[in-house]
Length: 95
Ligand code: HEC
Image 1 (cartoon, rainbow, N blue to C red):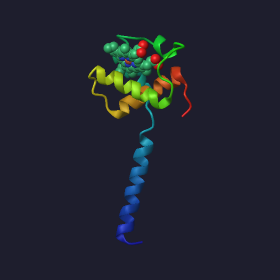
Image 2 (cartoon, rainbow, N blue to C red):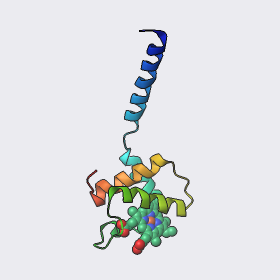
Image 3 (tube, rainbow, N blue to C red):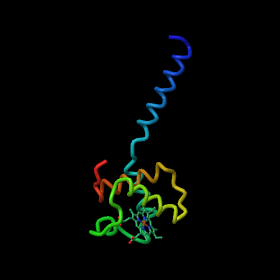
Image 4 (tube, helix red, strand yellow):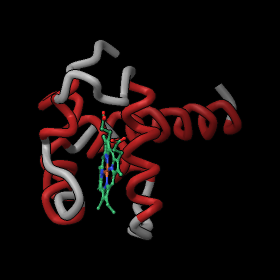
């Protein structure tokens, strides 16, 4: 093993651990939702029979649309955390 391989190996290890560190933070997502998302609609919208969101991907897209409309400037991570919280609590889509 030469220096190049050693360096490359270390970098992929680092990439691997950051990916794992980015598992969803459901609690943070729930908090974001409570703090920013209850002025127009509550959870009744997520459970109504004719709800608009019909897939896990669509859920992320809708969270993105609403936070953009509100100018919240969320990071992708915030969007994902909130979408995952909504999925676990209300939508229950399979991955
Ligand atoms: C300015 C008002 C407003 C706020 C605040 C708001 N939304 Fe929405 N949201 C809407 C409207 C309007 C719809 C579409 C309702 C419809 O189609 O009947 C919607 C729909 C949704 C849906 C889809 C519901 C369904 O039918 O499946 C989700 C999910 C959602 N919003 C998430 C969020 C999140 C997350 C936030 C906070 C970032 C948020 N909303 C804040 C106006 C708002």
